[in-house]
Image (cartoon, rainbow, N blue to C red):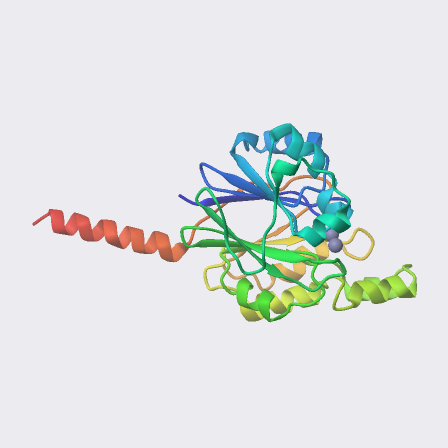
Length: 275
Ligand SMILES: [Zn+2]
Ligand SMILES: [Zn+2]
C-alpha cells in the first residue's frame, strides 16, 4: 500500500495538502473554502470520508480560512498548538481541538504525523512529516531558511511539498515596498527558488520520486521558471509545480526500498516453495 498525495491549492491565496493511504488521510492546512476543498477532492476522486484530521502549520489566513466550516461539517479533529489556536482566532468545536508537540509523533489510523518547528513569522510554526510503512512525505512551506531540522527531514522524504516562493531577481526589481521585500527574504520569511533548489540538489533522498514545488508568489515568481530551473536537476524525480488556482493530480508514492525488499521476499518465498 502506498501514499497518495495532492495539493488542492498552494500559494498566498490558500494552502491545502492531501496525504493518505487506501483507508485514511489527513489534510495539512485548510486555507481554501470548504466548498472548494470538497469540489477539488471530488474532481480528484478523493473521498472526504477518508479524511480523519486536519493538521495546522501556523495561523496565517492562507492556511486556516477553511478550517471552521470543514471541521464542523465533517466533524474533523483539528491538530493545532495552543499558541497557534490562540493567535489564529479560530472558533472550533471544543471536542475537535487536539494539540501536538514538536517531535512527538501523532498516529491517525495507520498514518503517523511528526511535527517539527520551523522559522517563519508566525507564533508557533511547524512543518510535518507524514509517514506510512516506510514511505515519508514532507510538507515544507512557509519557511524562512532550510534549517538543520528541515535538512534532516527532507533527506528522508520519498516525496515533498517544498516551498519555492520567489525568484530573487523578480523580488529585487519588483514593486513591493522595501520592508516587505526584507520580510520575505528574511529567515522568518519564505524560501526563494535558489534556496529550494540548493536544498533539493544537496539533500534529496536517493529514492525521491516526486518534488512538488509549492507556495509560489503570484508577483515574484513564474511557474515556468520554477519548472525549468528544477527540471534541469531532476534526475529520476518528477517535478510538479503546484498551482495557486487549482489542484494537482493525485500522485502515488512508494518507498522503492520497501517495494524492492517486498519483491525480494516474495521471490524468496517462491524459490523456497519450489523445493
Ligand atoms: Zn502561507
Ligand atoms: Zn505564512
